[in-house]
Image: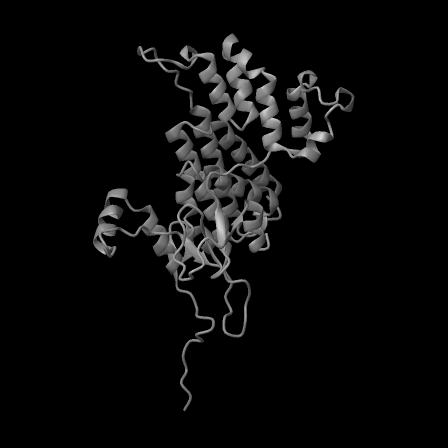
Length: 332
């Protein structure tokens, strides 16, 4: 008599009903663990983590990437699973990974948000809400977050009649994005009161010049230069814009707009004009303090700064993933 049981090659998932709809039980458990209070989470980690050689092993967000299906495996790695296991929501709260997550959300909203599954759509909206709360809490990246939410509004408007999922779920997305925008509209920049400590305008010109050289976004330099006459003098220096040109663009891109009649006389070159022309033609280089990577040995996706538990002796053999390359893994 044959033994009848579940096919181990493609086991069925258990589902649980939540306030947001039906979700997979194993992903729901991970979400509950991530949303727990930080104090309770720290207490559970102290009780559960095994101490070896007086060192604590921290949780490493990672997921094994399955390239395709086979006779033995009928399940592929989905985008929603990658979001949960890589802790993209927690990465939005980290200042080092905020720009990477923002670029990732921007690509998803512009490419095919309307064609994603309902679970992936809810994950993206939850990530946007966490990013909004983080921006309001830290008062950093407010203009960038407004631009991202405007992109979400345009994506929801364009896919109103051609989206996947119910109309009720789509209306919930629009209401959530409208709620985030209203939160940012109510935000007012708090001006620092005079407390007797040195202010930015009290710094000498050399210190201001060094700070400007560390800025990679030209809009920050322009806006800071509009504050007072001293900052405007520093922000107008050609050496500063020359460094920005060589940082964001390669030699072939710069040669397109460099005036050939001036030759090697760099004193007569308007580097601010060259930067503006190159920026309009080629765009600005993306800069990420932390990024996702894939291990060349075990095909595991992980954050570069945290690492992953790989048993291979070949350390460091990983390939960095840009947001575009990460989405290409899921054919998005």
